[in-house]
Image 1 (cartoon, rainbow, N blue to C red):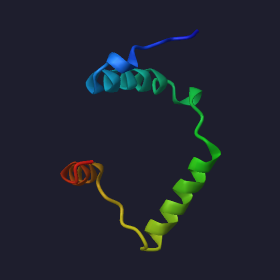
Image 2: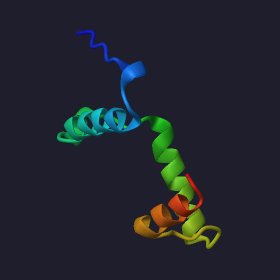
Image 3: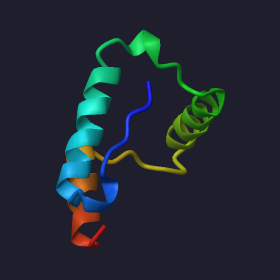
Length: 72
């Protein structure tokens, strides 16, 4: 199946809505979407950094507010 969207004429909000709909569909069955091998390694490295005190975890809501305040 080949789906073509009018990306050039879609607003950013419309594009985000489409992305959200696709992600919602994909995430209904987590077993269908396999994480890439590199992702597990990155998670292990980050967990080790937190455990060793080299990084500090931040609450997701706090992180989003911080990013938004930077204009990201």
